Amino acid sequence: MGPRGGAETRGKWVREGADSAVADSLRPQPLAMADAPPEVLELNVGGVHYATTRDTLLREPDSLPAAALRDPDHPRDARGRIFFDRDGVLFRYVLDYLRDGGLVLPECFREHKRLAREAKHYRLVGLENAVRESDPRPPNRERGCITVGYRGSFQFGRDGLADVKFRKLSRILVCGKVTLCRDVFGETLNESRDPDHGLADRYTSRFFLKHSFIEQAFDMLQENGFKLSASCGSGTAGAAELKPGVDTEENRWNHYNEFVFVRD
Image (cartoon, rainbow, N blue to C red; front, side, top):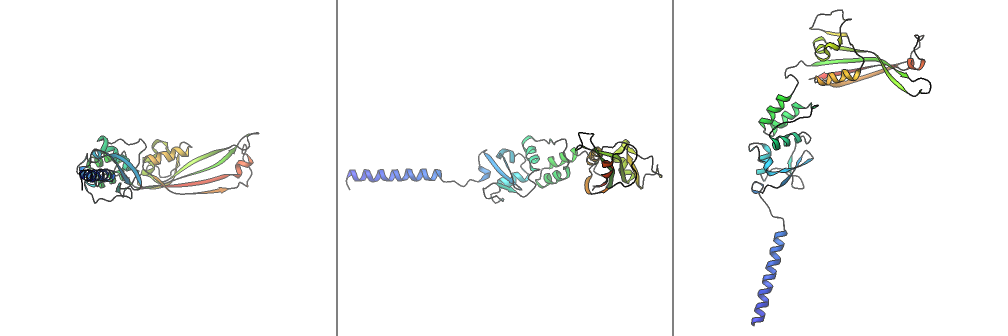
């Protein structure tokens, strides 16, 4: 083969080698996560997706997120995201802790026990302690249930506003263990009709509240760690002679409702 043929052959080899190098550079290359650069990483926590950096996940070297990043065999989803089979919503606080080194919870946050459990699973001792310290509820508070009931009616509007209805509550009743009722409702609790007034270690169905705002009673129960467990309601139709000032339609819509709240 002459000089010309040899040059063409060498040129062909060079072009083929260059094309192969380009193809290799475009092909996805396996990369050990422990040696990966500080790039953005995607996580899948119980179906909720997050994005963070490698440095954030490695901030607590002994934590589960750091171990998952270093472990090439840790479970991943179909798109290659690191997968944790945990509560995806609560993980936002775990990730915030890894980012900032501190814990900031919403004012209305009520899932301290669940978040402490998540922190323990992720091997974040600092976060677990911070969650327990931020829980405003006493750890050894008394468990039990309180029943709240009320009798009410709907007040119709005046002429021209016949379609307007206003809820009227005559009284909010409170039943349960006396110590629990006092703990929740405090000074808003009226004990004047309780025949055993003064005895603490007992149950009663004679308490009622000094106000008639059922939502306020619900708020106080929630703030003290009670959750609604059951409820029931009934309606009555008045057949007796109406009292002065009571509207006929209003008397027809009398009702009684009870709500059972439980604190574990």
